Image (cartoon, rainbow, N blue to C red; front, top):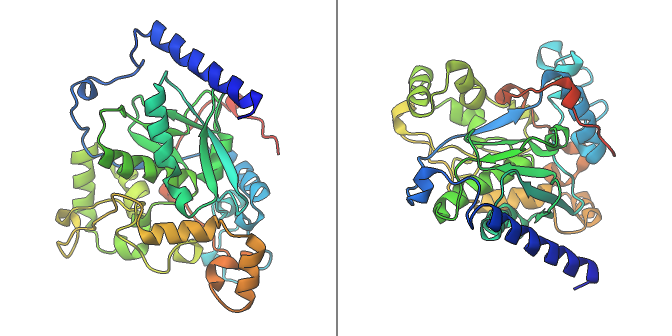
Amino acid sequence: MSKKMRLQDVLSQIAELASEAINGGHETYEPEEEKKGAAPAEAGCVIKSLPARLLLKAADVATRINPVNGLTPGRFAGMAAPGIPSDPARLALLVSKYWGPTPRTLTVSFMESTRADLRNRIISHLNAWTRTGCIKFAFTQGTGQVRISRGPGGYFSYLGTDIRLIPQGQQTMNLEGFTMNTSEAEFRRVVRHEAGHTLGFPHEHMRRQLIARLDREKTYRYFRRVYGWDRATVDAQVLTPLDERSIRGTPTADQDSIMCYNLPGEITIDGRPIRGGNDINQLDYDFCGRVYPKRDAAAALAEDEDGSDEEYARPEAAQFAAVGAVVEEDDWGESEDPEIEY
């Protein structure tokens, strides 16, 4: 271990001891239910969107970070106007938000004072995707690129490179009520799901094949009763399908994906539930490995020249995640918009 790393480790321990002394050996935020060891009720996740004024800037950031995110020149040439938006802000929604195939570490900080064992547990679940992917998460004592709050607000995350546009004083991910008493199953279901959004993966249940199975009125009633969502939120988070032409994903909808909600049979037309995923499954891992390959990108392209895995390996064939219609818009004062350094 280098002198710098030893110093950082010592400073980290000092900070933990100071926090425990100030807070009486306890975490700053610990909900009453969790103190008693009660498991929180299963909650849905919301993908947060940037204010409309930042859409073009977000598209620029995403494309600078990973050029494959951008609209390939000529891809939409000659296509009819009804299928392709001409407005720049709407066109920006067709830009995906993946970090790119180069190995990268995203730093993680916590908005509340958080014990080391809980920090480590959360980050270990964020890093579950590294089994096949090249993007890692690492704790920092400073202000992280990923900023986690365990306060009110439910479960949410911004999508992929959009976290670069969030004011540093705000969280990019929310894990309401998570403590060491939270079950391991809930860590797998929620933390790994939110990590998927931070990697740029949208909700799998927004695929047209799965939405077609839902009874709209029953869906509205269910989400109002269970989550308190109004019709507009249900439209945004459940009932507005992703443009299949624009999704960089598996060929067919995967209802067992960690990125898919569990939806009960009471709201489906055929009475059968959409199972939803409680952990990262093999198709999730396979897709993550294609988007964030651990192997050399040049080797992947060379393999593609032989005709294998063309849909995922060839950058110019990359599809775009049209997520603008399926997220909940957030906002803050324009003066808080962060300055972006490339």
